[in-house]
Amino acid sequence: MQNFKGEYDYTIDAKGRMNIPASFREILPPQAQKTFVVTRGLDKCLAIYTLDVWEEKIEEKLRQLPTKARHYMRIVASQAWEAKMDEQGRILIPKNLMQWAEIDSKVTVAGALDRIELWNPERFEKYKEQNQSVLEEISEEFQI
Image (cartoon, rainbow, N blue to C red; front, side, top):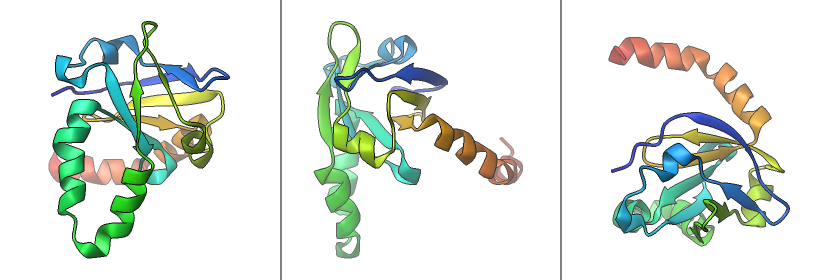
């Protein structure tokens, strides 16, 4: 299983294409078939999973959700978009998802272990600042 780590500042071109960081491309397993699934994430970011993780883990978890969570399943699945990486290492980010996450041409690409997150750069900085105390609490509680 891949472990995406690190934070990068990238741009998205006028056609909605974004480079996947080279360090992320290097750890893609063959079963991912150079394909990602882009969907809504939490905290107004976009979540990007490799195709194998999406099919083997995320879809299975979505199927097992109780009926009361059907809204979550419906939104995440209906907003999911497969994006095949081209020869330049780019994927297409759908315009409707970029609008939802309020991402224009500048984007922060953050590794989140089993997924990649795309953030509006200003929102990500605010998010990190606002959650510093939570970070410290968790670090102390779990001795990380």
